[in-house]
Image 1 (cartoon, rainbow, N blue to C red):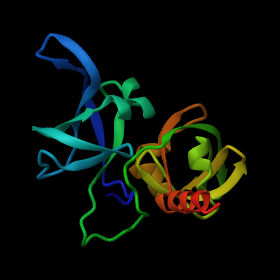
Image 2 (cartoon, one colour):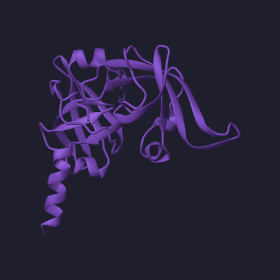
Image 3 (spheres, rainbow, N blue to C red):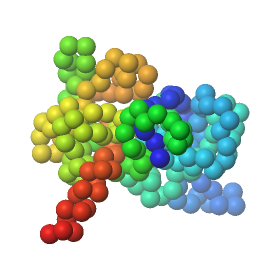
Length: 203
């Protein structure tokens, strides 16, 4: 479980197809990341651009995670290359402040940036999102974009949401570099998902 409050920006150091007995490639990826975290342990969960991944190995200055075929199919990890920066968040402790919103780290799909604009000191981004995410989106509700907890500013279209980024978020995460055409991981609000499911079964 996470909150969507990014605690570090890491860097992909190596991307490798998982090998079986060192002979042939099997589905899935191994990502080796550089990160400033201390005390990372094997088996712990870390959100990488919003996707909950399990640490398989701890290396000097970072860690390695495995991306299973199912996760690769609904994320952009298959397109990642060495040098790419990513948003990171370690799993929530029971005693931590819930500064963002409840984030599962289960990416629902990929969104596309369709518009970027300014309003005062804030930057506005329109995102074309999957139907499953749009269905649970409401103005002033929550959405996770590349692991960052954000408030939905508006719903500009039947397949779109608008988010607003303050200067701090643009500076402290990878979202400040977004431009039209860029793609990002999105996770809809889990509370909205439960409401949707309850309403659908109550018909």
